[in-house]
Length: 132
Image (cartoon, rainbow, N blue to C red; front, side, top):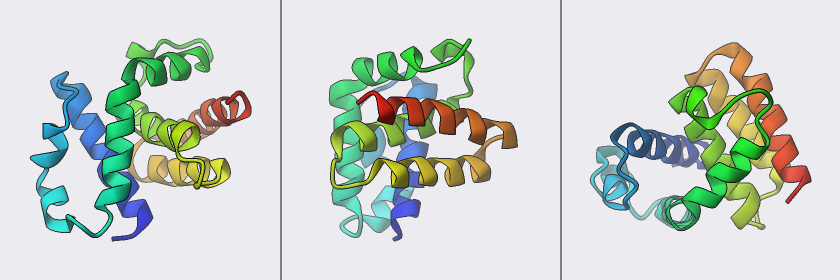
């Protein structure tokens, strides 16, 4: 599994958590796609999900602080999930360059969200990376 596919899986798991309002590791463990790829990229995936669960409120505060004229509850759940994955990488995974995290988030956004979202997500993540 490529790192992008792993990021996409993380985004899907965080999306599922948000929809269910169930911020628990069992959402990851019960994910069918995760079960199929287990042990291939699971350390990266586990790290993203674990860091998010440990720092959920702080991550959301940081994202919301960098939203321009928006509140967290107004952005799409897909965009929020993408922002969360990239923010975890930027803040807690120093081995991944922030520019890589931002570029990957933009590419995932282009696949899963509206075209205009990519520019907005780029701006939010760039601000987060600049202020870390």
